[in-house]
Image (cartoon, rainbow, N blue to C red; front, side):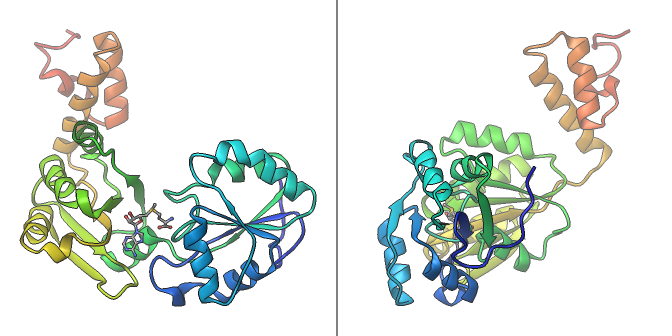
Length: 288
Ligand code: SAM
């Protein structure tokens, strides 16, 4: 464990993790700007994109491409530069690095090497969406992007069907309709949800309603399928029936790998459902 005070812009040997706008350039903070101005180089997911952002603010800094395909290979090299006393910034194309974006390997390597890693917080699409959705926000689960393949996506949604906390997802324009349809099937058509589109941009829209109504709206209006999306779904109600349904799902899955008695014990523990309710009553279960 290591402790450190917040580093001032340009402190030698520091990796600054800098949030950048998710659309509206006015959201780049003054401290982010100072930091980008003060570092020796900026590690960027897409150097062309970051060059344009810096140019908008009249900045020109050396850029290093750091994306998911080269991050593992480059992390040690970048850490060596930091250890030699350079100060570097890490940015992604939009929002907060490491949030559905590259950077975690570099940050881990830097921390392991005892390098100071300092956040310059700012925009993040799911936090912005949560702040305007009007869904319970004291506890939530950020799921990032769902799997692209329909079968894997439906399996993931089935695993989440009984999650009581508010669920947050990122989704792209070309899958938003399919994802809403799969969610309506997995969570129920009536489950309250919010679709936050193009936040901080010209066509910002925040729609709320039951999943089926959102799906109908998106199907009816091509404009609602354009841009970038955060999809939020209210958590499942914690009823006794919901616990039993979740327990049965877990029991069926665990039985594929474990003896029925162990599967039932684990499923009951994880779901909070009574063990006997999991296999359809006392007569048909493994325990008499
Ligand atoms: N690191 C970013 C962050 O802090 O939010 C997210 C990067 S992730 C690769 C990009 C996804 O974030 C998009 O596909 C979309 O789901 C969501 N997103 C980014 N900007 C958005 C915006 N302005 N409005 C709604 N969703 C957005």
